[in-house]
Image (cartoon, rainbow, N blue to C red):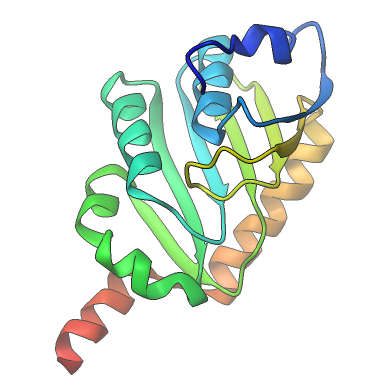
Length: 173
């Protein structure tokens, strides 16, 4: 997030606004995740994106280091495989479960240990950009359940674990 931007000027607390949206170049997905975790506590994360960057992984590393996340489940796109494999060592240090699928969605699901759930549908990949990006944020459990079921289906029936793909690539070389 830009140093001059205050996320609280862009978003309202989740308890006050169960549905909200924004269009801004001052908010990154990692900012949203950190903001959500500050309100719901320790949580498991499901995240989908076309691609991921080292900068975003660093942010996730520190979020995990602060013991805000119990586990991260990540789905990236097959077309970004070369970039993803370059980050493989770092990804495996931060994210327990990473999958590759035909995926262009950008979804963040947060399920806290206390049972609170938050869904975010965003235009932004897990990369750093200074473009205007949009997102819709909801605390509605029905929206969460629907997106969760679809992501779990994507993981279970339509993806390859990154570790398996990396092993195959190493064996081929």
